Image (cartoon, rainbow, N blue to C red; front, side, top):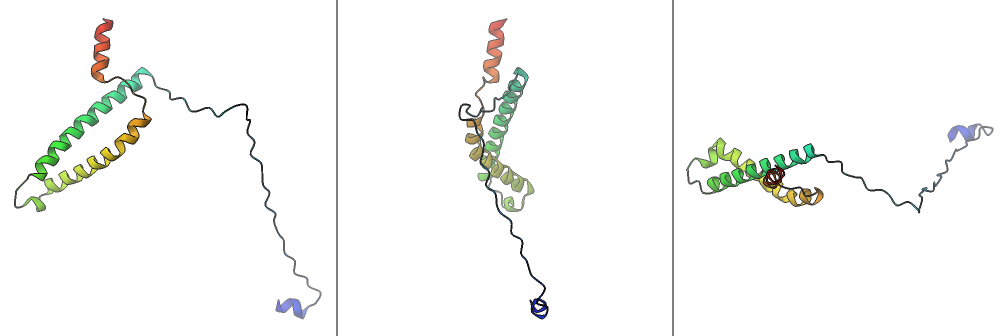
Length: 123
């Protein structure tokens, strides 16, 4: 500003930008199409196998948690096995908290036992 006062012929100009609001274009006659889950027999089978394995793992970690909780060893607090078991139990707890959310989003499919029964009936 001191320069502009010293030289009265210099003009300071300021450029401004305008924000342009754009309208969203939607077609009211066509509602949005929800995504369709693509699931073939192999994928469904793999999901059932994974579900069964996770169930087995949860059962084993539950057993481990009971053993650690009832452990009366004087050195339990210093034992690396006990520390790892407690970590596994923390993960199991998180899994149990998240499981209802996950299960509600997955389409229900028959269990491996039900699938085996269906195959026997077909034969």
